[in-house]
Length: 150
Image (cartoon, rainbow, N blue to C red; front, top):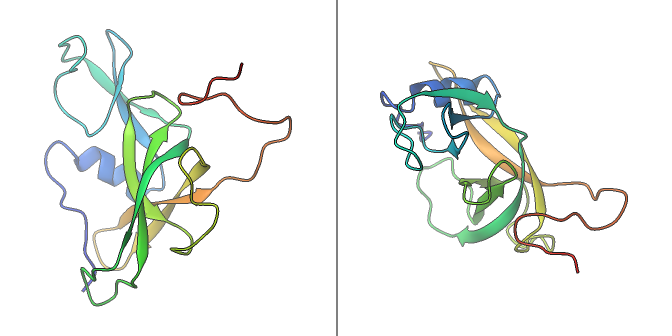
């Protein structure tokens, strides 16, 4: 049995967009802060005005865990779950499966990753996030939320 997302009132739009292979986050209309998971009120300014906006799908590994526990019969073990600091905002962290081996030498705090999607069998349509190590960018190191170039 495949584990499927537990969709509720607050997360329905987000899961529908993930099923369509679109990464979006709520963004406050008043203060422009991004937020995830979806919720009614902005925790920065208290506004109830928000909209979903497309995200870049890029970030860096903030942490990871190699899991050896099988949660369903079709879950291969071991597998890696990443926590990714997305480029949109330094305090926005998003979990997802690593699209690679549990002993991949590229797994490192600060490694650049890009989002992908893994479709789940069955109806209604559903997908889960995956993260892949990004191809190196030309032009040297990239400054990001946890790196300061001096």
